[in-house]
Length: 361
Length: 254
Image 1: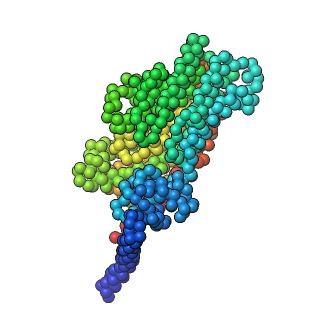
Image 2: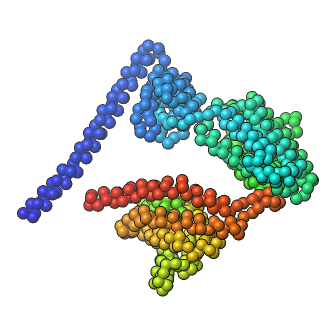
């Protein structure tokens, strides 16, 4: 009796295990039939296209990167079409996502395809499968820069005016601003006004876009640090630099020198020969400020760091020093990256040249 | 601190994958998991830390039995507590070197927040040492750490008793809020003394044109618990569901 009971239990277990197996088999069959259907459909359409127009057309199947579900099929894509064109067609089919927030990948986890890439160059057959990711809300780079740089101007002004919301009125009255505070205000304004004007009239901005969260992060960084440094520079109990006017004047002159240098380098970089994917590497011209190109690959960053070091010394304020250090680190990383690109791209590039700090880095 | 749980969970998972790596060929082992020397070192480290926190636990019990009261037990375990909690700084190094596959940032945050509470609050403000809230987080930490370090030890040895795994992913439900409560109450108790003494504060004017208000800083830290605690607590609950339910499935299969 007992033995029989055991055998019955075993049978039940087998049945239980069998069920999921059969389910899996069914799923497998469905998958196979679906893929066969897709495969059979493709060639027919291709043949038809060839007969009618005698040119090759591609059909692009777009799947969701996460769920792997098909979102839509973009057809009648010519071999000279670019990824940008595909995004336009995709946008028509699915108006919910505009072109700049469409991220397309050849394989899951692979790099996003650039807009200028032609469909033909990535096509393995006349049917192409791409994976779609929603990149989130996008903003143009110009918008990003204008927002990041206009904030510091206004914020610093608020602190400079010593609003009663920020500083105690009695203290503000008792301790008038030291001359260096006015000079610092002037220099700070010059810096950000220059950046704003260059963004509007000098820089050739990339056609790409930036995610909204990058905008928020950038603004938080710039606006936050501006608030921090402005609070102490404009504080009623601000202490002037240790070495007096000499320290201030030398720093101010160096600051203006670096600002001018930065500006001239940016105008060189913005020249048509130095923008876009066919750029040749920038080189110095008759302007002495551009001669830093002889020593470093990214003199704009060198001058930028020079400006902030000067501003730090001029104001002798710890928050400015911290900001300068962070900016130096960030720009060094950018400069190295760019330096590496230059080396790869231009065989004739001078190898002994530094990325950002002459002879050192 | 809130980060403890998340880091612990991360490490646990990381340890698991490390073991899997070790199981493969020797080549794969070199790449993936910690090598035999690193494993031996980690086992020793975790055993020492388990023993250390056990010393604290025993110290607490003995002191309680001797005094007959739970007030001011902190003084009985102050030194080992400082030593072993500060010793946890080595874990940041382990992550940085790569012998432990956890996030350096997350681990740093966890360890530094506890070291901060020990030295910058409890050690620095003598008046709070007799507070019951100190006992609250010390007990929570002690139990949590004994479980956590023994969990790592057995994981590295590829022999993890179920009861330790269960304790690891169950007792936090009580210990975690308990620890956080103790931490917050301790910081709160320290505030008036910090303000009164101007402890660790820098005021204007000075030649660096910089000021720092430790009192405000502590308040800021207390406020930061609000977004961090729920996030990490529910992460641990999610982790628990995943780990323990997997075990149950395994049992059913057997």
